Amino acid sequence: FIARSDLVLLGTYLTLWGFNTALEQGVATTAATAAGSGLFAKASGAALAWLGVVGLLIDRLNRVTAVMLCMGIAALGYLGTMLVDDPLSTAALTLIILLGMGQISAFAGAHTLIAKEAVDATRRSVIGMFNAFGAVGILVSTFVGGILFDRVGPHAPFVFVGVLTLGLI
Image 1: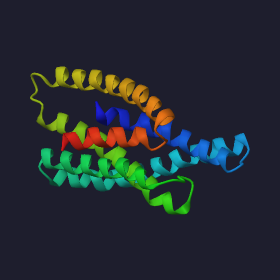
Image 2 (image 1 turned 90 degrees about the horizontal axis):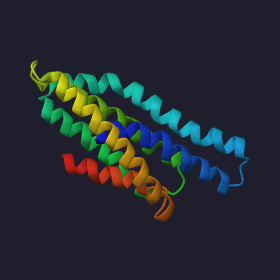
Image 3 (image 1 turned 90 degrees about the vertical axis):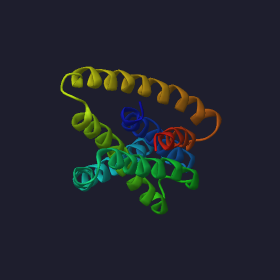
Image 4 (image 1 turned 180 degrees about the horizontal axis):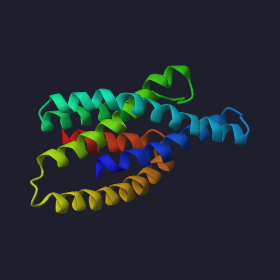
């Protein structure tokens, strides 16, 4: 539910947050689109760079412990958005990197737990349910996230997922 919605959440609401912030700063629509997309690109680049490190951590730790660590990193990134007013600022770059690291950590941790701990006889069913709940997670996080983005603020979808992620730990 959580691990699958992370990437969609970043692609949708981080990009939108950057776009809206750029527009508020008087940037033209085309440049604002590029600014919002640039945030997602930075988070994705951080995720790609972090994937090797988190893979080594997951491989060396107990799988459940590794998932808890991965979800902790993700929760830290998502909840950290409460401290950011301007995601385009240089000061927010650390958070953007942490969001990317958290997103890939949650994804890799969940997949590894399933791959290693589900018994052969039921692995296909477990993976099927994982994917089904992932789809539901995407629908719920984008629906609730959109309402929260509009009514509370641009950080709210991330806080919502951060709180859900903490519930897994």
